Length: 427
Image (tube, rainbow, N blue to C red; front, side, top):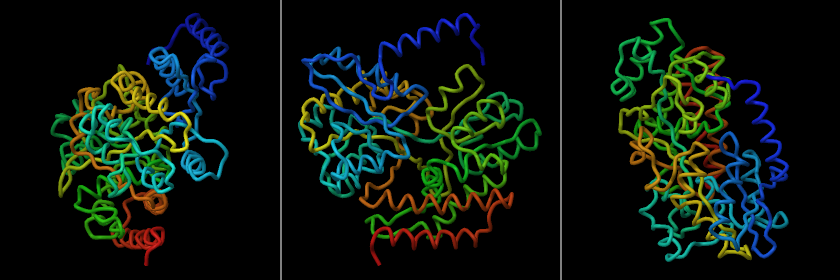
């Protein structure tokens, strides 16, 4: 990494301070006011290194095209987002946003409140229609089995293999072959470990912010599932699902230092960027931290029962009670347009949901393999149960310094399914 000279850094700092004085309070995220314009409130969750600046830039670009509309940004901390948004929709808190950034897995729960606005067929068509978006992402636009479009895909989070190109070259492995399936991944990591040059793998464990999303593709690629197709019964304890969980935790127990399994996603990504290990599994935003370094990206590896990758991210929803629905729709329309996708979304490091805005590379090549979580009304509660129990698996791996026995996994996942059934409110 190259560092700036002190004089250059001072000039940049002075510019940032001046910009801050001009822009006002960062957390309010509002561009300069125009008293004749309608102001709408956009609740967003910070993504990327400079989320306030990304919003400011987007709001200014939008306002230049729509001088009669101003967008006020309200930043919501990730840990508070679901609770605050749900409270705003159910009337448990005063006021509320016009437009919300909604996690794809929350769409069913929010739609169940009856307080998010359905998009008309004409409005959807004016956005380019459903085929303009990555198909798996579009599947989150409506609550489970309703067909009522209450959210529009904004950006995508998915996982792929990041690796050190110099290390792969040193151990004589072609990346195109070295990560193609679970067996190849195992062979590659074993070769790196045997070389003694660097730790082979780094992934977060118990402090993984998206631990269910991390385990999910392994379960799917083993032929398992988290829930039955009709969304009424947990299946995470079924044999194929157990096999998938076992496969992932074996990689962690075999190739990841127990201390790394205690780290957060951000810490693990920083460690990879600092050269602490040769391979990691992460989303598209990691690439922003690695510019200029020797790294490559390959598709998530194929499993024993198929090739499936996790696909999540954020949608955009309009509150039904908004007095500015027309203006709110225009903001959504801009955010999911080529202009919004290639500027705002690109800066955050996430993958665009709009097909036409997609950059080439490993992430684009696996979009057709994507699978999302079902948009069940109970999904947030179900995911919370799974996250707690899957994190406990990593606790066992880290403390034992080896993979957990399969019978222990079966017990944990049996209890997980029982707790999930309770969360569903069904016997």
